[in-house]
Length: 160
Picture (cartoon, rainbow, N blue to C red):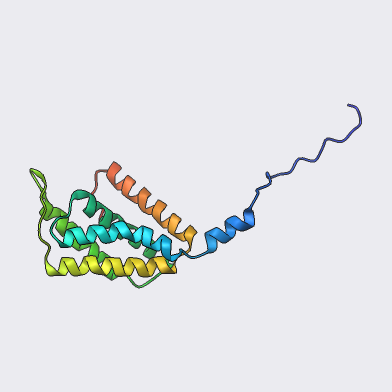
């Protein structure tokens, strides 16, 4: 030993830009970000409404419904569970009709299914306008984990 003290080692490494990162996570989604999220959902709803919906359109809409249910579970926007479960039921009935032995068969939607899909776009927009960026990312990651877990167990994902 040379009698000198060791230099001070910080417990945690310094993070640059922590204030700006906190501000970005705490701010609400901008109108542009909301439109970017809703654009594929609205395109899928339009295609399904016109009887031209493919599997990708249905899965985009079903993913939006799963994220909306996850947002409801987080408690940020409350009171929409009944509506979202009805939308999920409509999506499941569409999927049952469209999945045939030959693959995906495009079909016309019933009025209540079209109404449910339009409600999804409206309610999802309402939820996105009330969320912060961090809450939205958390909801998407939880919904992704939920779907991945359901697929791993071979279950059809249904509304809770």
